[in-house]
Each structure stands twice: as structure tokens, then as C-alpha cells.
Image 1 (cartoon, rainbow, N blue to C red):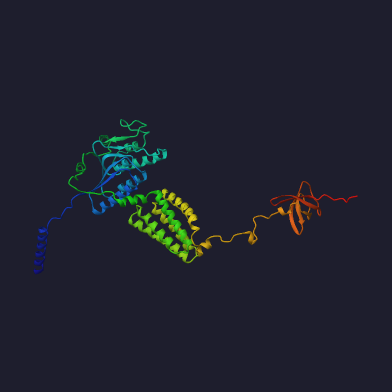
Image 2 (cartoon, helix red, strand yellow):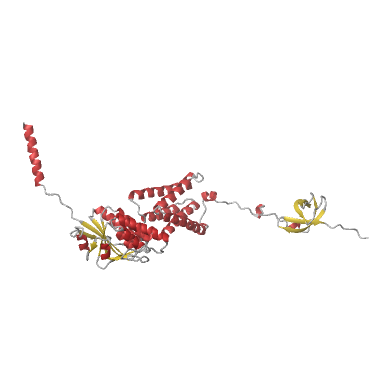
Length: 436
């Protein structure tokens, strides 16, 4: 009975404290605002990546991409498109003025689109407007729009002017829409004069706003993502390792390769897990090359190092067709650079084994071809019948010869009348009759 009384008392106390405890605090809505303006390039892609990562880490309710751009690089727009489509945080595009070309793709990549009065979207024909480019970009626009609930037919007409769109663009004219037309064709959710009004359409009018601006870090990453800059970095990595092999493995080449490899990795879009795998492969490749330098002649470390090096660089560059072109261009540039600079570097024992040192010179008794010109006008005797070719003896030497126009028998005195490279031409020596 005492035990039961104690249990009842404890239960009453527990529920009393629970009732007296303050209600759980509901976290207020927060929205992160990422403005895109000017030309779309690598720095814009790096900026959006940083902003989306911060939004996920801070638990923001939504991300707003404010857009005012005439377009830019398609590859950078595609990177932004992929990041927005993969975002776990809901995304809203607010077109403040123009979302043309690459800007239209970015807007369609967001789950919701709101447009300011007087703004426009579309005009996304690629340059150059080849059939291949149009078909590829048209498919991207259509798939992106369909996945986010926007009108895919309209998205296609923004890229391919040949199909047009009834009542809005005749065939042969590219499609661009005003804010009202975009609402009519189910591209946008409506119009709003301000960002606050746009957010109010999604019950986020009272949300706290965090504005993020593009800074120097994004500009640096944008420069590092330039294909020409990446090609130079690959060339410097390969040339540095070639120099390391030639200079007896003093460590400077491997250190240089490590630095530029780190810059390439910094410019990538890999996740932390993938980034660590790539770093591990790259470091192991440098370690294998270092072991090959320490024990030249083994071969297995060098082969493994080369395979891991090019494999890690391929994934650092994004594992795309562009990565193959960059690797190929960087390798050719590295060979040229090493040819120009390498002759001034000291040689190592391993480099001596990898290169041909012996030379066939006249001083060592080597000649590219025997010199038969010394036999011109010399006399000799046939050893075999010349039919028309055979062998003659000039002095103590046997010489292959060719008869000049007729067969010549054995043991006939002949004279060399012509030498053409290794071809010795002879004719019978005229008989000399004694004077009467």
C-alpha cells in the first residue's frame, strides 16, 4: 500500500511539473536572400553554392534567388541549376527585372517563381545556335520546368525559336514573356511589387530575412573554375612531377604539385565525402611517385602513382568530357613546358635510366651509311659475273657493283664510272694494245 501511494504521488508530481513547464518555443521563419545580377559565371555558381550550404546549415525556411541578368555562361548556369534542383531547402525565384537566357534556366530551377511588374523571362537561344546546342539546352529547360511544375512547352519555346508558341511567338521568333504572360502560361505563381509581398504569397511575409552578397571568395573560386586556368594548373602539376623525376627527388616538384592540386580541389563542387576520397587518391599518387624516386627501377610505384594522379585529377575537374579535354591540353602543355625548362635542370639517377644516353658518333666508329664515293674512277676485278649486279674487288675490299648496260664476266678488269649512294656502277676497262 505504501509503495502504491508513493507511485501515485510521483505521477501527480510529474504531471504537475509538466503542466507548469513553459510551452516549447516555435522557431520563427527565416529566409536567406541570394541576389544574382550581371553576367552568369563561375563566381555566381560559387556564390549560390555557398549560400545554399549556409541555408541548410542554419535551417532556413526558404531561399530566395533575386534575378536580374541578361545571361552568361551556360556551363555556370547548369551548375547553378543542378544545385537548386538538389536543394533540400525550398527555393523561390524573384525576377526583379530580367531573367533572360541563362537567367531563365536559373529561375525555372526554383520551385516557385514570382515576377515584379514590368519584368520579363525567356530569350534563351544558345550562342552559337547550332542544332546540337539547341537540342541539348532545350531538353534541359523542358526537364527542369516539368520537374518544378512550370510549363515545359513554354520553356522549350524560350530556347528553340523554330517551334514558336501559339498567340505569344510565331515560329521563327524566340519566346520571351512579361510577368503577366508568365502567370497566364503557368510559368510563374504571380506578380509582386516587393520581395515582402512575394514572400507573403507563401505565408512568409513575417519571416526574418538574411541577405548574402557575393564576395572575394566567390570571385577566387570563379577564376579557379575557368577551363583555361584549370588547364594551366594541370600542366604545372605534371611538369612539376617531371622536374621532380629529373632533379633526383628533392621534394620541390612534389610540393608544387600538392599546392596546385589543392587549388584545383578548392574550385570543385564535390561533397565533403567525395572531396576526401579525391584528396586521398591525389596524396597517394604523390606518395607512390616519391617511393619510385627513392627506389628507382621497381616500376610498380611509378605506374600506380601515374594512374592515381590522372584519376584524381579527372574527378577534381568534375569527371566530365570537359575534364578529359583539360587533362589532354594540360598534358601537352606540360610536355612543352618541361622541354623548354627541363634542359636547364640537373639530372637524377632515375631520369638517366629513363632516357637514352649513348650516341652513335663517327668518333665511336658509327656511320649512318657507308661512303662509296671513294671508289669513283677506281679499277678493280670482278669476282662474280655481273648479271647485271655482282661483286668486285677493289684493292683488298669486296664491293657490290652493277654493270653499266651489259653483263660482265668473272675476272674482268673494270672501272667505276658512277656512284649513287650505295650503288656502284662499273664497266669493263678498255683493252690497251701495245703501240706498233
